[in-house]
Length: 320
Image (tube, rainbow, N blue to C red; front, side, top):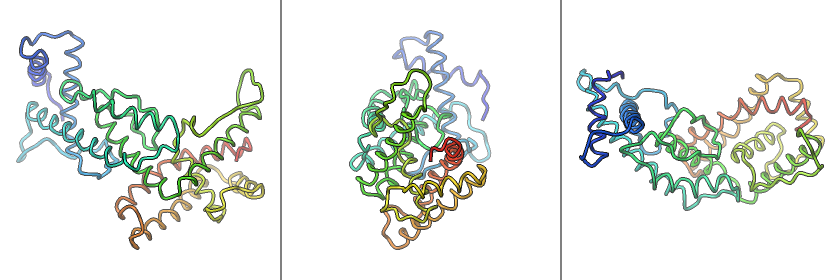
């Protein structure tokens, strides 16, 4: 919803007065810009509407409200106040969700995930300014999630990040911890072998040490990829190690196919996995209901396009 500058400036003025503890409405140009961004951020929040408990709204670009009451457009002041309330409520819900995840959270000894979730997020909630700078994300959120949240900022970005981590934890906890650790260890050994065989430019001494603690990629995607390869090979998940003839079969499977066909095969394999989740939900064996199972399926499916491209590239470099 668009508002003219003459409607926004008075709101910024009142916010500046509050910032200076009613001593003045005069602030620096940089601070005035920040306060204007805060006002626009809150108005945008009013357009989005208040987040529901754990609804995992993946379409952050959609408008869930037209800022109208009884067919009449809200004033900029009304929209700002409504949005400011939404920011406060979303912050409260994000913190609540964070504390729900925390007791059973596992980083699998990965430094990036640990530092982002365990060290970083508490600092965000400590310093986040819901009134004067709600648009500031504060953190870089270095751990990469499978959903693109780069367009978001402030509590929008942090709330979605926490949602993504919750889904990843649900997926990873479907497997014993030592099973996940072993997949990550095998992944790092494969990367090390690739690097040792000349996978980098510049001076190289022939040795590359890489541990699961150092992984900067998404852990959930690594495990998800391993599961899909097992499904494509009709190989029991309990048999983690891929034999040479199985790698050859994967090489042949992907070498004959272009990226769109690889993507389709991956989606078919993922569907087998998701159907198993649905059956568990129906039988009451799953840690989540059917609706949340659907959100997890959507989330994991978001990794398939990129995975198809990487697999095709891996075939060319014999990296499977």
